[in-house]
Length: 513
Image: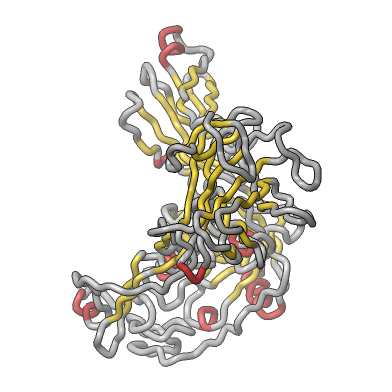
């Protein structure tokens, strides 16, 4: 919605034209606020303290420009960070805030600043890698977030021992204050991406795998320590309780961490590690370009020799085994190449988490020995069940001249759950006879047949479904509208295919209305 806000000190014409665009109002949305100081306007976003926002501007509400110079803006209460929009020179302008996807937004290159007061902070960080002790410091983020009293230490195995002063860091926000968080997270990792000249392999892998399975988040961040620039790092989510809570109802239980094993062949480089490296060295624990995404230089031919683009236009088919009616069957398609690589392609693309599906329906039977003859969906005082309750009921009629055993057949009021209520073992309906079933959800009653669903006087349907061994064919079904009290809905004596509202006749021949 658009909210016009007065900016004190501007001319009246400018006040009327200057507007702010904010997202649709709800408890979780941010609200854009403007503050005027002399001729300068400052923008602020009110909202959750662990969210940040892009600011965009428009002069016509159609074309929006991203204000990259503002960066992202952390929301909060009345004391949330404000940023200057510079001197107001336009007669009118509209602003809106677009929420980022959080701390690990893969589209952002964040800037993190660490400050340490200790003169030997590098030595302390190094010692902390093996002892687990943290170095006290302060952290700020380019969106305005700030955490005092963080604990930091170097981390890593092969990545630490490789040459260079750029080391991976583990930073705990709750080191001195158990409640401290950085945009909702207690701990972050800044990895030096040793052996990966692009610094993109880890965040790219995490961003892709997040679409398929449980996986940390990843992004990129620039790091400054005591004002000195240390380069671009892989900003990786820590594998802790915060990660588990994002994927599961609870983070209780055991969580195991595999050993960080260094070494490897380091193909193509002079140093150790298992990643093909340009100029020597490699990262630990990776098997090379034939099993990981690696940078092989600017020559496209190097990638063509290690990666294969799989396409196909064949038409394939398959047979799915028979399932009982009402079953939801999930399936996916897998195609594999006939060569030694056995490369696979899946449909849908994310078959690990989202498959195709269909529900097995009950199809009409060619003939039926029993039909739904009459029902009452608003029984106020007509007929009491064996327990003395005036519940709704349905009456079945055996159209044959033989007694029928209904064991294994079903009643339902939902075509997607046709096997909703099974007839008890030994349920018989006599030749040319009637059978009454109470629709009252009173399955524990000792006397009478009581289905596990109720009918609705506002209208619905009742289905009679055959046994599993007969393919759950639909023996009969009746759809009815709103029903008056103490009147039944049944087959007419003159035309058994027609249903009308009539006087109730449970257990006997229906009468004309």
